[in-house]
Image 1 (cartoon, rainbow, N blue to C red):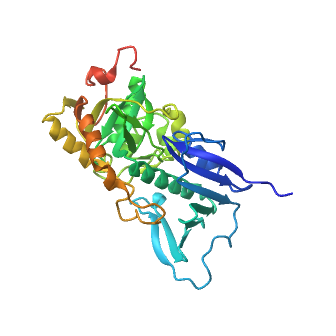
Image 2 (cartoon, rainbow, N blue to C red):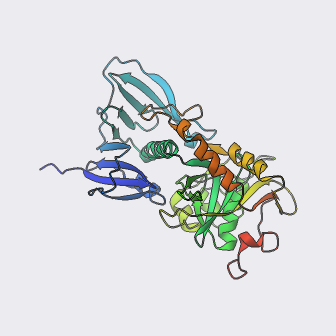
Length: 371
């Protein structure tokens, strides 16, 4: 007797993927990773009329399944290319009869994209669960952007139905400030890398978090009891000169024990932004938090500079399942950043240690909240 696949719906604020999971497909680790931000439930009648962005058919591991026809020319690409070898995912891709075939060369995971049928077939290789996560995140983010969401390069701390955004360039100290808010002021982690922003019908803006793999510099890891052990850093480790606060030499931190150490916000929340921090942390004796200067238009311009897209970058075209539909929503994204520019905002310099004395009351909250 053949066991039928289990069909799940993965949902992220209106973006739906159907996931057909064959027995033995090995998706448990991927679903556990995504569970902080995507809901997964067994398929049922959908009264909203929404169609799935794609049906992902995840088959049991099979080294022969989903390979392109013998003799097909293939090109070397990356699902993801990072300064960190841990996050770099090289692959080979081929196109045959309107289908794209892709094999991750580190894990053996294979994808076959069929745009006409709206189906993506998957077999996971050894330790390939993050390949499936990368596919899901890419599809969801692109669909969110194609329906008017803005994706901000920002961490987000959640408390009492509101969030504090921490935005800036890579290495600015977003993760450090996020963890300071969680550690000392009763916040929870809503997002550790990207924050998805939606415009509501009344013109207001709400923020949703995003599942990411913690990637932290030594200066951040060393600050919090237990985090060094979670990151697998020995007591004898010494960072290279000048890199304790830089993006060089960051550590991939196991997400499951990290979430136990720094709790996540409830799944599916989408809430207003109460405050915005713009850090530029580095060596120094004191952390200085000051109101952001300049006009509202200036602040909007700073925020727009931190809007990012899954359609941009060297590896954005690792598959061509979804077309880029952002142009239809340019005005909506501009409105989102304009609204955020009116939110109270501060700059943050120095080592990034937040205390009741240097943290604005709008962020610190009542004295009894701080821990």
